[in-house]
Image (cartoon, rainbow, N blue to C red; front, side):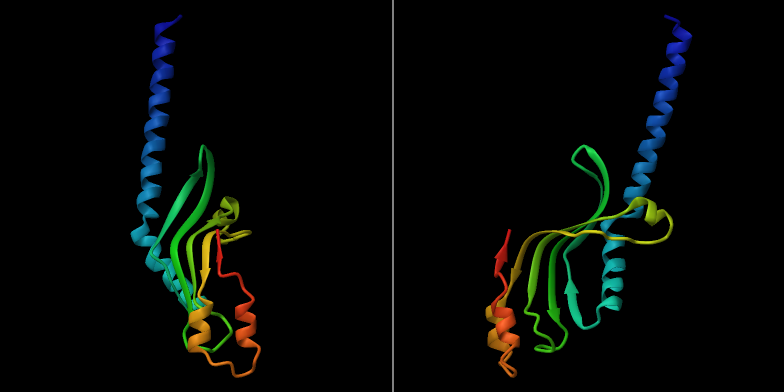
Length: 151
């Protein structure tokens, strides 16, 4: 085996490894939760002013196990009406939501979400029934038919 060829391959490998580490660190720093959280909160408030939507953290995930996958993970989400009883939506809490992002559409400047995976959703129907009197007879009945907890 040619030692010069082996050394050249090792140098190439180390160069690509170092470049990928620097790029990965750059992406992690640019999309840090401290930067993503206020940005996403502002976009949500602009898009859905009729609801108060808050969350504890948001994180960019680059892999799903061993497979590469680009997605946003949002934890401890709380959804409520801005004005109580405005609509028939009771307060909702979601432990974790995973939003896969289409990388090629993101490169084209579009954020396309095709599905949202939710883990542990809680709908506070009792609070809704206690704070919103039944004016039409339909609003509480719609809320009461919903599942209280899902895993």
